[in-house]
Image (cartoon, rainbow, N blue to C red):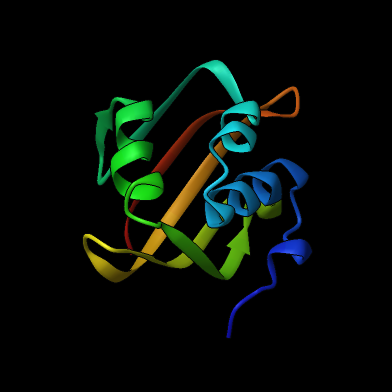
Length: 107
């Protein structure tokens, strides 16, 4: 069972997932702080390169299964044209209504 994106608890995380699922780069970058960072499976990555490769150019999409930590920790089925579907975890650090860091990896 998935949680509809518009019902995610944290409005900043909701905006991130909405933008990612729509492939809307402008909206997604608007929800990130200028110096935002991220990691994938425990290794820091270049955020813009990762988003381009894993989300925008490969039609990435996130179907959220569950949330914790007031909506800032998600378990989601993530799929894109490169890797297919996989169960993933996402943890977001929100500062002043924008995401300063997210960490993702296989669940």
